[in-house]
Length: 205
Image 1 (cartoon, rainbow, N blue to C red):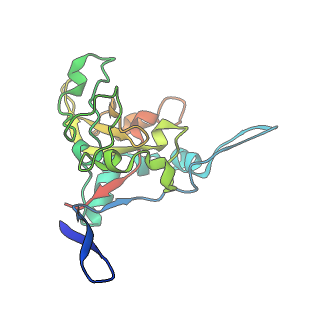
Image 2 (image 1 turned 135 degrees about the horizontal axis):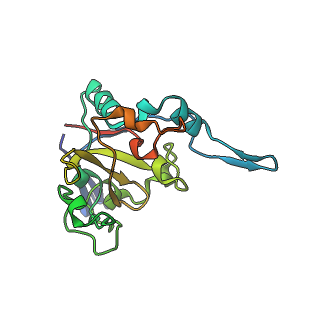
Image 3 (image 1 turned 90 degrees about the horizontal axis):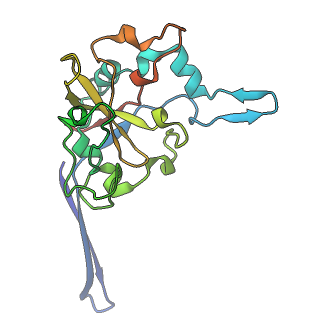
């Protein structure tokens, strides 16, 4: 890669009447999660999905460091933000500092915290809402449709923090848990901290 493809349509006399070409630049691979991320609500109450159960049982599997190691074992890497979205980072609950280091694909989307459909503007810019493709992502639970990136910011306590991208809208989230502290991924009640968890999506180097 990259590899160019061209499709040519001809009439009955062999003359070219239409031509379409595209360039395949990257392969993406996502690590399958148990189940499909769906849940069910019965009269007896809420029933966790297989993905939720696995996140509770194996929280480290959804960490940044584990996802990075898995990608590298395949000869791939974690994607950069620009590989995934052309949305602008505007998540400023902690101030504008949290968006430092977030470089999106261009042209930047004018939409608020969302991609704009454009060829060459990142995965969501080209394909839209990726939960529609039945690859194990869940629209209704944000953390189940977020993927780690290889981009980090360092505004808080000078610790590097990874960005995630929500594959529904392409929005960028500066994850607030240090990638160096896996112990923070388990809260006092014994349940995994959702800030530590996202799916592993890899891209060709």
